[in-house]
Length: 403
Image (cartoon, rainbow, N blue to C red; front, top):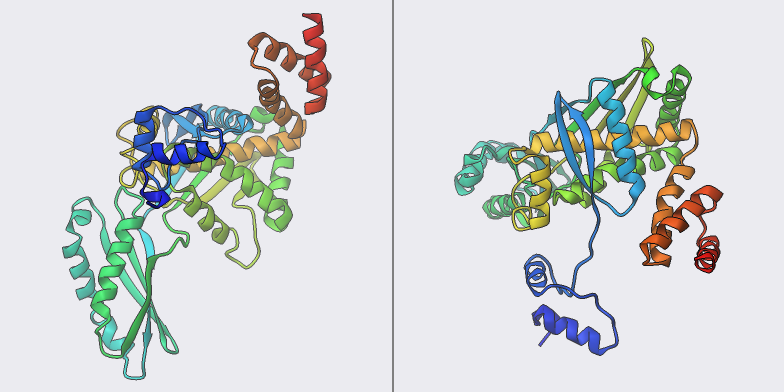
């Protein structure tokens, strides 16, 4: 029997027989995980943190963030608190749909003009076939085509309603491709699959009174850093990493495909041929203005979202009636909060000191399981402002001798 055909308990035994130490896991949890993925042998846990005071479009939210780096959650809370002092975030989503591609090989007898006349009929057939999606407010919306020599590129716009929509979109594309394969002049289908090209764009905007961040000089410095991120790709990629720290943590917590969003943001950041910052910070009439646009092809239903108790816990934190549009606006607002906190740190005390204070907890926890020793070690590291593991070991040795 092949490895993937075994029950998860049998897979675990095989690995343990080879001398691999596996973490204990509850049988019921292991069974549920095995239903979600392939070759399951255990789980990898992430801490679930909370952004406490995020205000978006006049509504306050608790936002779950799944991430192992404490500074990401701390930064999101810091940025969100600043936003709250300045009237919160104004966010807007354009959720027309996600794109799919069908690419066909054609011969000299093919007529694009004649095929385009059949697009309304094809849309109608797709919506009849996938009527459940239409009933939920989605469906196939548009088909466009471009011919390049003997290749025909069809772009299909699908509204996935409240779901991420990847599986449904792929099914629609395969259905349409099958209808087209016998059309005059079409030789063969090359592929029919969704595209992760940026779509479902969401924008978050803030207006910051410099008094709430330490004064006009700091605000001006943040605006300057923002411009450097636009002009310099070395700064831009690091700026965008900080943005995606917040976005990815919220995407993970809500069971959404952060990998697809990451791929789409890379395209969005390079729209004019140069990689640029996704956020913009400028000064206007004495205020600091921040703006961030991200592709947010996400959902609140479908996929594994309903099947995962941990994800349902996140939605309970957010609010049970939350929509995909609202969730997108929350996530982009969190990402902008992370960005502001990072730029503020760089503009003032520097970013490393805060990072290392938070990472010191991880070092202390790795060196000792004793709670009293952890607290003493953490205090000593912060007091001496030395966060290396080798120095922490020396401090721990000293603490134990004194104890």
